[in-house]
Image (cartoon, rainbow, N blue to C red):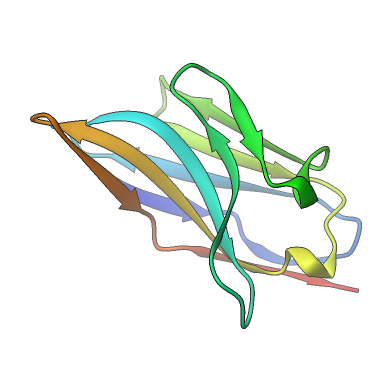
Length: 118
């Protein structure tokens, strides 16, 4: 499975962005998907997860502002980000947990830059 993230950019504080992640390839079954963020000088952190049962989990700092969703028919993952602040600046990665042949894998996209100016 290959993941391609897009939708990043430069916005002002208070504005919104919607990130997209397309999944392609075959031979693996995607179960859960997530968005990670790596802010400058900080470690990568998971900010939103969409589990295979449909449950969603969010990092506390993005709850109420970010929404993760998935379009299975189009093999797309989305992250709607509202009321962005400078603290949301970073590289955003989409990740998929996949299974094939009884083994599990973590597939990472290439990342998309989000910069929020104050």
